[in-house]
Length: 118
Image (tube, rainbow, N blue to C red; front, side, top):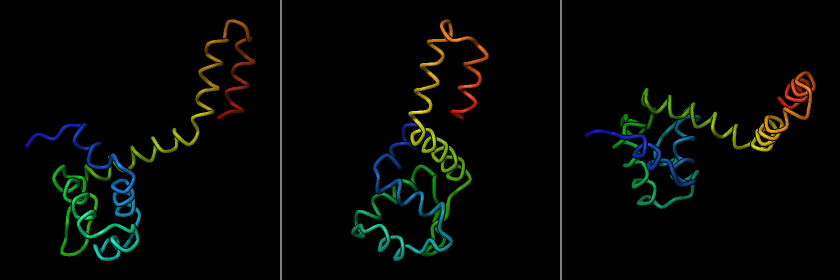
């Protein structure tokens, strides 16, 4: 089965699925009962989401434990970067405004502003 980027993103696209995925990525104990209790889903809701992640290869099951696969670790780190970008979106918008106004503001002033924003 050929897995696409869309398939990967679909598997973690809702908040609860992303929460499960992040919990598996962060936690030292990935036991399914603990995950179900902590996230507050029914068993059916939990296993439907986990099943999608298993199918696309983001996680693997070892007995009652879940772990990120190598692909899952890469996706996990990329989504952390995306999360940081979303958190700092106002800074990124400010940088975009500076790019537009480069002709008005001297380059050295733009660089000072960018350095203070970052």
